[in-house]
Length: 115
Image 1 (cartoon, rainbow, N blue to C red):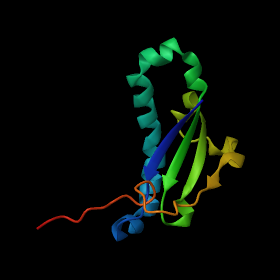
Image 2 (cartoon, rainbow, N blue to C red; image 1 turned 90 degrees about the horizontal axis):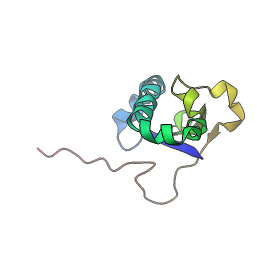
Image 3 (cartoon, one colour; image 1 turned 120 degrees about the vertical axis):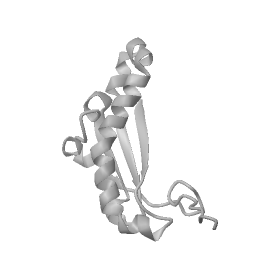
């Protein structure tokens, strides 16, 4: 059992590419808060199935910049809510390839504002 979280870092617009490093930093810093909110929101589920707290949290960072296009294992959910523990799971970090076809998971459809 595992939890898979997807974060869009860059791609689709040049401004996202420009701020990719900042976006990656913010996601890494704030994701534990999101995971805590997830656990809090499903408190009854976790109370009935405490083994869910042992589920590995996989974080997919989607980017057209190779440095930020990767998957990290943040460890069991109960640890991931305190921040990334990638140093414990170095062998579980991997770089993934963007989809070969037109999709919205690697490069979301960015609409241009109408004037």
